[in-house]
Length: 113
Image (cartoon, rainbow, N blue to C red):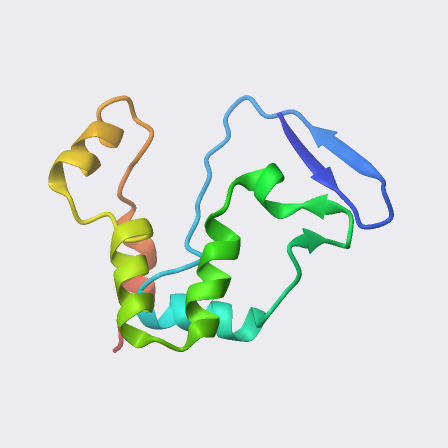
């Protein structure tokens, strides 16, 4: 089940029995920085209504703040600690129950030719 809220206050709930979440919002440090630079200094609430931290946790606002700081070392440190999954034990932990799976197709498509 997934809920989709609209800025006008409407919502729609869609059931799913075979859902897979593909999340490639920050493929690499440069893409992470570009994303949050593009988003800029956005508010702490979506549509001045929904508290982002209460809804999804603090990551989105913390990412905004570190990128907006312009401190490349801090940005890289945040990315390594909070986004990149570099610890083989952590990867194995999430792969065991099937919650993490590597899909090679996207990286082949994104690889420079």
